[in-house]
Length: 448
Ligand SMILES: O=P(O)(O)OC[C@H]1O[C@](O)(CO)[C@@H](O)[C@@H]1O
Ligand SMILES: [Mn+2]
Image (tube, rainbow, N blue to C red; front, top):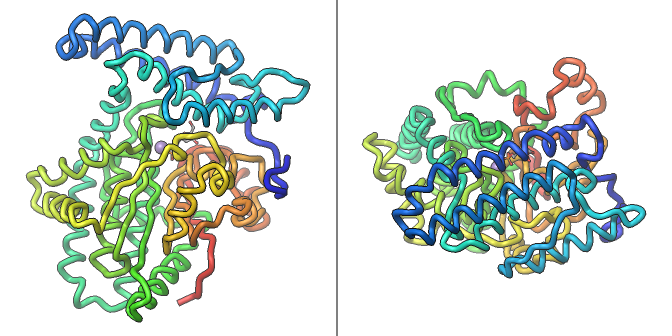
């Protein structure tokens, strides 16, 4: 397969029976749809209270739409064009035509025959269509309850992380560069392992952080298969150097993944970067519609900061107050772009979302959180494990970038020869059980 003249292997797909993609489309996706349907049922009374009979009728129509969708999926029907006239509808339909052109012998694009990345994203967009088509349901987030619950279930870990952050901030002035580096590396790893806590891999089951995140780090170190953290540090230090010479202010972009505990770990890392003077500006990127069960939307982002402020734990609330202030003064900002909820591989961004690509070019470092972002970075393809990360990016290089990801899908590049074979013999599920992680960097850097 060729895109922009750069060769890439086949896409992962449910057409390969027994593959993780196959099991996801067969088992996990219908379960997620069933949960959304249940959630709508359970909220019937509140729809009635808020919107009266109109609310109940809209809920019924959305449920029947979702039941049909589940049936289409389970019986491998052709995927349908979207009809909701939203901002991104045409982009989705255009992408469907592109997929159709890739099908051999003119078979229709369908759930089990097409690329996994495409059909999985498509399912979440169809859930949104069910709501868009049935106002006043269009504002409803069927995953909100799960995200809220995962935040509350991780309270202990959040408190201990915020306490750690506030201690660092208090002692920052007396810290040597080595201590600063050490603290940065710890918080980067906390943000990395925060990615274990998504709700999509567990079909919406509790996956929250229970133990102290800092204390767990030494035991987890050996599960990091590629660790380019020192390159990330070098890039930050270099950007800071140019800032002191008055050339620019270092800007870090964080492409967020999940709400709940993971989001807090990202906020803590971002808070540290600003307090330590390693970044002057942080731009968070989130989703504009509910996505992959637990992904952060603007509403989740604001809610999380508000809840942190309102905590009765001294250091948690102090952290929340600080974050609210960062947002107010513009040091932090939240952005969403429809591209993050399209099915495209990131190598398409320069052409298909040129505005987003050029915005990202202004960054000194982009952190991509989580598994789905990794799948999009590498195109979710059957790469050999030893292919270099920058090759799998196929020209996607808006700025120095780093993926922080626990492995939940069977695509992994940039390993040493023999490393994958050894892992397979020790732990056959190493690519999907989220026990392993990578900190994978691409971009120019100087070792510090
Ligand atoms: O929240 P993350 O880390 O992007 O993970 C999303 C999950 O959804 C999947 O895309 C599969 O449903 C996996 O790749 C991953 O388990
Ligand atoms: Mn996610």
